[in-house]
Amino acid sequence: MIKKRLIPWVLVTAIWVPGVAIADVDFEIKGLDDALEKNVSVYLDAIPDSERRLTFRFQSRVTDEIEKALQALGYYDPTISYKLEDKKSVDDATVVLDIASGEPVRIAEVDVELMGDAKTDEAFTELLKTAPKVGDVLNQGQYDALKSSIQSLAVRRGYFDAEYTLSRLEVAPGRYQAFIRLHFSSGTRYHFGQVIYHNSQINEERLDSMLTFKEGDPYLVSDLGAFNQSLSNTGWFSSVLVEAGIDDLRDDRVPISVNLEPSPRNQFETGIGYSTDVGPRVKIGWKKPWFNSRGHSLNTDLYVSKPKQTLESTYKIPLEDVQREYYQVQVGLENLDNNDTTSLELTSSISRHWKYDTGWQRALYLRWLYSDYTQGSVSNISNLILPGVNFSRVRSRGGAMPYWGDKQSITFEAGDPALLSDISLFRAVGQTAWIRSLNSDNRFLTRVNAGGIFTTEFERVPPSLRFFAGGDNSIRGYSYESISPRDSEGKLEGGAYMTTGSLEYNYRVTGNWWGALFVDGGDAWTSSDPEWKTSAGVGVRWESPVGPIRFDIAHGFENQDDDFMIHFSLGPEL
Image: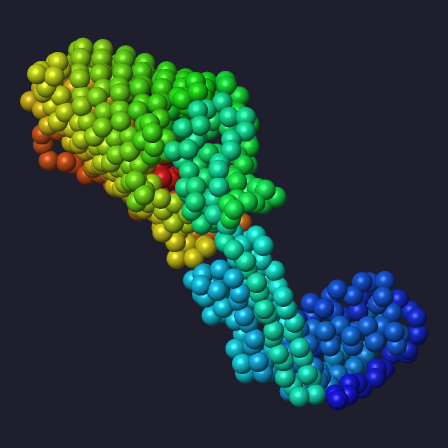
């Protein structure tokens, strides 16, 4: 039998005053490795201040806590000595604990037995590979974790009748041995039963299309979670709760209950923003998240800023695969008065969308564009029918200010008099942006935008299809859309081609505040060779709940004003 070896308190220069409360008793621990010392500290910190009196009772409590902390990590034979250093004041003392952990208790036997369907379940086989091994130093936390993990895995995989027939950790301190005994009877694994919807305003066939399992499939709680998330993502419901009816088990089936609360049929949104590109901007939105029982929806948004006013409405029609395939019908009206551009545009389009497991999305569309415009010194009216295709993907990790992410988008569209367009043209636009981080304090951002219009009647191309560069999200150090070819009167006329790029480095200064260094470059041009513009600058980023708020000071090296420009913007980086 092991005997506790304790060396009592030793008072060095202080006078022992039994029963006096000490407001601040510190412990200095010696003799242990980092893991043991950390665990002992955790246990000692749990002693309440009301018990911190220099008494033999306090010494006994300290001894008990040290022994429990060491036993949890397999050490049952410690030697503990105590020493009270000089008290700095009446209310302050340091107790020096010199601890020798002794020989550890090692695992002599691991007796883990599975009974029932879990015996042939590969998930349990993988879990048991993580069990403590014979010869390992006993760690009670690992034993508790294994026991809990087996039970938790059983619940997640549908073993609702599972129970331990034996669960015991036996320790023989005198022999420095421990014995793990876990006998687990899983019973039968249950399968998904009938799905029952409650309070849904949407046709059940629509909801069934989002099911991540079929009736009769083996139960998996992760499938329930995925289904719950899919229902929430539709916007049709203000509350979604998908749960297994474990109180109504029968014939190895578990019924699934889906409790739904419809979203308000009309939702309104207002917002105010600001950027140096367009100045103050107001948004008013009206949304009908479910227009009918088939889950159609309607979004209408009004954006108002000094140079641009836009009204657009989108009607979405989900198809059989609600989450992945849908039609959209859009109509819009835009009035623009910016730099040397004035225009009034009407648009209407119908598009077919697909989403893929890879994260890519594809859209085929047909849009009508009517534009009454003046660009530079030329006024015109264009009427275009443009079929097109778009491929895009956005990935991100890290919330509103991601530490990792990328975005790709490419669009092709064309018009021809044979398709009732005023002119023949082909237009291609591409964008890529990347965010990568070395660690939590260093971010790198890069982006490239490029595009081109191929036509023999460029003067009849409306401004919204031409290319302009410069501004907060283009080439900083230059005014918004101020870079493009100019006509004989020096007015901007827009480019047939455009390429811009940016490299940026962010460093976390403190908390949610970041510093930024960047270089931008590019040009918009028509027939002549591009005249590349470059800029560089510094900035500040604040990581707000809605995304980064950016403040930049940039200098455009080819800017005729040879001045610095301030850029302020907010919103997602991808």
